[in-house]
View 1: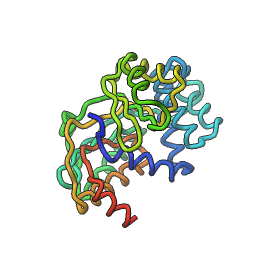
View 2: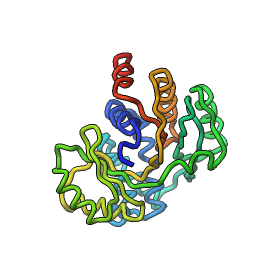
View 3: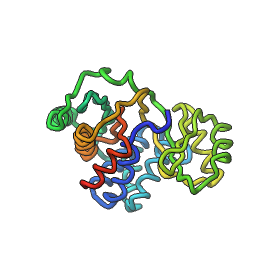
View 4: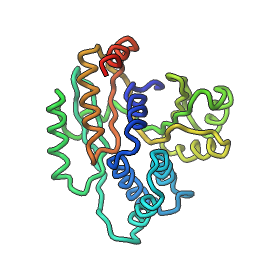
Length: 251
């Protein structure tokens, strides 16, 4: 299941260029609020909150903003009540797409996402239309120059990971959600720096895209990812290195 999608790497690079945007901080605030509400305000005992805080720090989100979001999630101050929803649909070439949403108004969010799907040459579908194509997994990405593969394999597998593989200059550690905390803690204890850690959806199979369809799919993915209420976008596509080179030259 390694190398699950080009989108993970594209999104990571895109996030670096957009790191200082207020929109990124707004999304991370929502993630912190929901994590604190679900698992408590102590990041030592709440890996979801700890990961959200790490993501916020990675994009230079101010400490005051982080602490304010934690207090809101813990109920210490008033705040919006966010709802977690999953929307599913299709992009060009039949690519399956799943969107993890945090919203305080689903009556606003649903039609907005439906419009984005349609404008991007896709279609939003009913609940369950594509979710069966994905497996819920923990995914930890580590730069290949930060640790020896054999050492990483020893640490991760001992902690419960099910797969470690190299992918475009990084190692991907994949595990079941119920051992995500154990694997994350084991890597932290060994001082292994991680580029990203998340519970995500990994497709069971991918659709290989040519340049024209890849252009359409990436445009839709970026539009969905830019929406204020979208926390994560997952899709089952792959783009060849040759096609990526053409798209990069166009950018």
